[in-house]
Image (cartoon, rainbow, N blue to C red):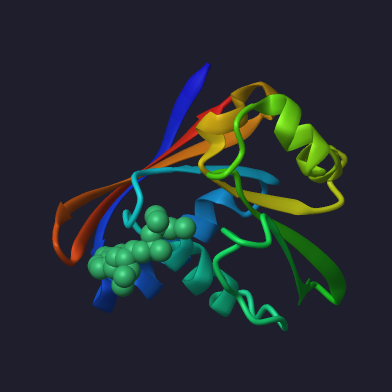
Amino acid sequence: MNTQLLQVSYGLNQIEDAVKRFWEVTNEFNLFAFSGEMGAGKTTFIHYLCDMLQVEDAVSSPTFALINEYHYSENDKDQFIWHMDWYRLKDAAEAINAGMEDCIEAAVAGEATCFIEWPEKALELLQKPYLWITIETTAPDQRSMNVELIH
Ligand SMILES: Nc1ncnc2c1ncn2[C@@H]1O[C@H](COP(=O)(O)OP(=O)(O)O)[C@@H](O)[C@H]1O
Ligand SMILES: [Mg+2]
């Protein structure tokens, strides 16, 4: 089943508000799949989201590392984020070899949050419930985001 949770359009000057609204409706979930073309703004959105969460580590595009680990604290508890980019992976087998499945298992167990760019590369690895987030470029500085809960 698919349930739409949010539809929002934003420019870079509104992205912090968009991030806040996003987190209000998605905070309780652990698996986030960010779909959108190169340059759509997946990394940018995740970067602002991590800023809002006051992540301690430097947030960068994981295109070269494939997986970045971030930490922040919420309600006096240490929280983990795995930020993954599957762009350079061929298929689910490669994703499993690269350790992506372990990150997802941690999310399913409620021990971490996963943000995944290019989830299309290994869709089989996703486990319900997860969020399917699409970002589209509607003008050079304008993005349209749709957030669906797949459950
Ligand atoms: N409203 C917007 N939201 C996000 N990025 C935007 C927006 N407007 C312009 N941009 C620009 O678009 C680019 C998005 O790049 P990036 O986040 O790396 O995309 P992706 O990770 O989807 O490939 C950045 O240069 C960013 O500054
Ligand atoms: Mg990116």
